Length: 249
Length: 349
Ligand SMILES: Cc1cc2nc3c(=O)[nH]c(=O)nc-3n(C[C@H](O)[C@H](O)[C@H](O)COP(=O)(O)OP(=O)(O)OC[C@H]3O[C@@H](n4cnc5c(N)ncnc54)[C@H](O)[C@@H]3O)c2cc1C
Ligand code: SF4
Ligand code: SF4
Ligand code: SF4
Image 1 (cartoon, rainbow over the protein chains, first blue to last red):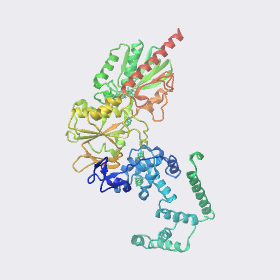
Image 2 (cartoon, each protein chain N blue to C red):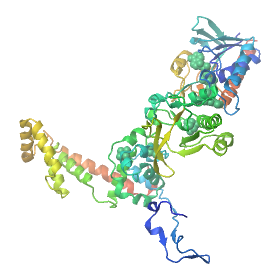
Image 3 (tube, rainbow over the protein chains, first blue to last red):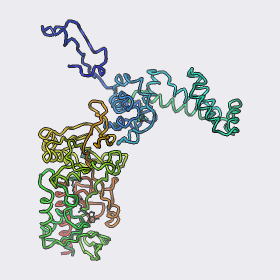
Image 4 (tube, rainbow over the protein chains, first blue to last red):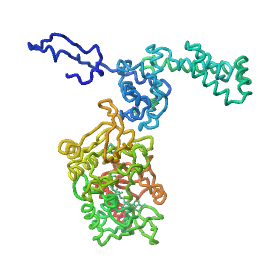
C-alpha cells in the first residue's frame, strides 16, 4: 500500500529496510517502506455499557454516526484529532485500544454543548466526552485532572459549610495543583474586582476567608450529603466492574 | 339506505379511492380544499415522477380526468368538511360551502405538508437565495432550466442534503420520509440531463432507495450520471466572499473536515403530518398517532381502517408514502367502503 498520510499510521507499523527483495525482485530504494497491516481482532462488547454507567453517557448507544457532533464541535475546529463521533463509534463497538490512543485529548472538551444541540439522535455527546474522561481517570490511564481537583475542592467546601467561598476555593486549588498562589491573571481579576465591587462586599469576602461561615442549621447535612454521594459513586462503580450478566441497566 | 361514499382530499390517494368507488356503481362526493385537483404533485409542481418517469401533470391529469368524467362523482373544490355526525352507514357531513352530504362511509386522503426548511436555519434556507428545496428544483426541472435563483447563472456544483426535516429528534421528526432518497438521486440525474456541465453531490447518512429503486435510481445516478455521494451530515451552510455557498461538515469516511464551495444547495425536504390533522381529528373523530399522522387500525383484517368505524384513511395521511402506494391504498379503501355499504344493503333486505 502506498503511503499517502504517514501521520495516520502508528509509527511501529512502518517498516523501512535499506535492502528489500520481494519474490526475488530487488525493490530497494523507492519501495523500501512497508506498512504492516493492522487487524481489528475483537470487540469488547461490554465497554459501551460500562461507559453508560457514567452520568451523561446514557444515550451513547443511540449514535448512528452522522458526524454532526464533530462538525459542530468547538475543539474540533482547533484540533481535527478531537473527534467525538469517532470516539462514540469506538465506545459502542468496544474498540478500547483505539480510544486509548487519544486519551490525552479526550478531556479537552470545553462543554459548550454545541454537539448536544445538533445531535439528531439525542445522544448528548458532551456527556459521553465527560464519561470517557472520567473512565480514563478512574482506570488510571490519565492523571487526576485539574478539573477533578477543582471539583473536589468545591464540593468539599459545600459538605463542610453548606456554601462556597470563591477566594478559598481558588487558593486551595492553586495549592493542590502546585500553582503559584498569584498567577498574573488572578492578580488582574482581583484588581478589577477591587475597582468595581463595593468596599463592604470585599471586606466581607476577606473576613470569610478567616472565619469560614457556615450556612445556618447546616449541621449534619454536609455529612449526610457526603455519605449519599459516596454511596452513589460506589454503586455506579460496582455496576461498571461487575460482569455484564449480573447487572441490568 | 346509503349509496354514497365521502372522499376527502383529491391527491393520488383520494383520486384513486374516488375512481374505485365510482367504478363499483356507488356515488362519490369528493371534497378538496384546494382550487385544483391532483394533490401535492400538482399543487407543488413536481416534474417527472418516480418511478414511472412520467410528467406529474400527465399522470395526475389522467387520474383527475377519470374522476371528472364519472357521472356518479360530485366534486366540491375549495371546500372542507366542517362537521360529521352519525355513525358508520349513516353519516351526515356538513361542508364549508353550506351543503350537507349523507354518506355511508368516509375515506380520508388528506395527505401531508412539506417540511418547512426555515426550521433548520443552520442549513441556510431563508438566508441565502441559492439554498432551495427539492420542490423548487422539481419546478426548475419542469420549466426546463436549472439556474441559481440569485443571479440566474447555471450552477457548476449542486449539493443535495438528504433527510432535511426527517430523522431528527431535535425537531421532533423521528420518521424517515421514505421517498426523498429516490427523488433526490433522480433529481441529480435530471439536473445533469438539463445541464451536463453541472456536478451534483449528495450528502447522506444512509441511502434508502428501497426495493427496485436501488439500481434504477441510486446505481444509475452514480454510474451513468456520475453523481457523487458523500457520507456526511452537514453542520452549516454559509457564504464565501465570492458569493458562492460553503458547505461545512465532516466527511465521516475520510475523518476530515470539509468546507466545499457550491453554487446551489438543495434541501431534500421531508413529509410532515398534514398541518390540518388536529382539525381533521376533531371533525372526523379519529385518533392521531404519536407523530401526528392519522392513526391506523390493525392492518391485517381492518385494512385502511382508522380508530373510528366507517372512516378509512389512505396515502400520506397515514405517514410518509409514495404515490404508487397511495394509489393502491386508495383502491383498497374503496373496496372496504363498498363492502360496508353492500353489507348494509344485505342487512336491510
Ligand atoms: C419533493 C417531493 C417529491 C416527490 N416526488 C415523488 C415521486 O416522484 N414519486 C412518488 O411516488 N412520490 C413522490 N413524492 C411523495 C408524494 O408527494 C406523495 O406520495 C403523494 O403526494 C401522496 O398522495 P396523497 O394523495 O396521500 O396526498 P397529497 O398528494 O398530499 O394530497 C392530499 C390532498 O388533500 C387535500 N387536503 C388536505 N387537507 C384537506 C382538508 N382538511 N380538507 C380537504 N382537502 C384537504 C390537499 O389539498 C391535497 O389535494 C414526493 C414528495 C416530495 C416532498
Ligand atoms: S461539548 Fe465538547 S464535544 Fe461537544 S461540541 Fe463542545 S467541545 Fe465539542
Ligand atoms: S451527532 Fe449524535 S448521532 Fe451524529 S455522530 Fe454525533 S453523537 Fe452520533
Ligand atoms: S428517504 Fe432518504 S432522505 Fe428521505 S428521510 Fe429517509 S433516509 Fe432521509
